[in-house]
Amino acid sequence: MRNTMHYSGIITNYSCSAACRHCMFASSPRSGKAFITGETAERIVQRLKSAGVRSMHIGGGEPFLNFDALCALLKEMQRAGIGVDYIETNAFWCRDEEETLRRLRIIRSLGADTVMASVDPFHIEFVPLERPIRLVQALRKLGMDYFIWQDRFLERLLPLDLKTTHTREELAALLGEDYIEDTAQEYGVKVNGRALAIAKKLYVRQPAEKLATAEPCAHLLSGQHCHVDLYEKVVPSGCPGIAIDMEDFFERRLPVEKYPCAYRLYTGGLKALYEYACGLGFEADPAGYPTRCSLCYAVREWLHKNSPSDDVAPGCFYREMERTMEEE
Ligand code: SF4
Image (cartoon, rainbow, N blue to C red; front, side, top):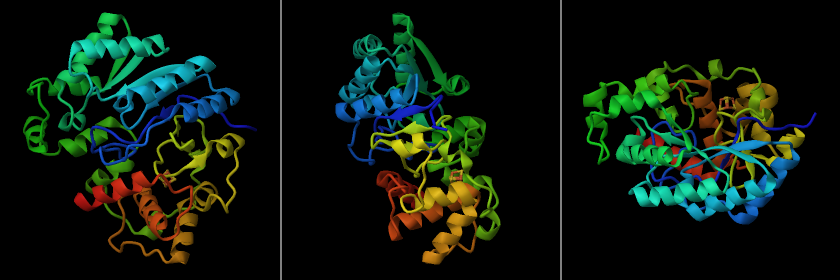
């Protein structure tokens, strides 16, 4: 049976104005300047349409970093009749009301009438709170829909100076010394991507042999909440750094020669990937790993350097993750 997608998204770029501690895609200002083009957007959208996909959300990185690229994607979606569930943004660009309203009117004319504004103790290290607040006010003024991800954090952060960003120390003074770990847990999302650095503090390390079980990561071909990136690859839900060509994803094909990593995870779980990497020379950290996904990332990071394959991508993710793990 052919595959399709539900509740899934399109990644316009991996670069971001922020580098949040929980970012699944380890996006940052250092992630390069590649943005989706009109031609790529057309190919992606046409393929989605032929797979019966009716709507997608748009995220990044930060989609508003290159407004022309975002609009090019919106135009293709509008032309193909694929709905925009919502656009995610950290609102860094909402510096004044006039520009905020101008951009919102444009996206609305291109079929996007719902925006997700990111607000939490991680984003506020990079984006002053007044900007998502300005975004929400502008959305209300235009009668557009929105949601704040996550509302509960907005309440807690309001005592801070809204006009500036805030340091880890300032946030710890307001929210408590363990606010990073508490926020990650409260988010309730799967700990992966840059949040693997937080996982080190949340979970007791276990030996690689214990974590590398044979339970297949069968969701790698699931169409629920996955993403298609600007390189026309599908990033499986919750598994950044794994890339599957759209065509193969929709046809449910994972030939081992083309996908030495994804195929093993899909069929034989982390055990199969771990044994494959050990056979190539990977040596596990004797101190162990906090989670299965931490070990999976460590193995893939090693493969990315020592036995590269197209399914261990994109490079910007691994470069940024390596920096994160060194810094923490
Ligand atoms: S072990 Fe790897 S493939 Fe499986 S869920 Fe974790 S990151 Fe994804």
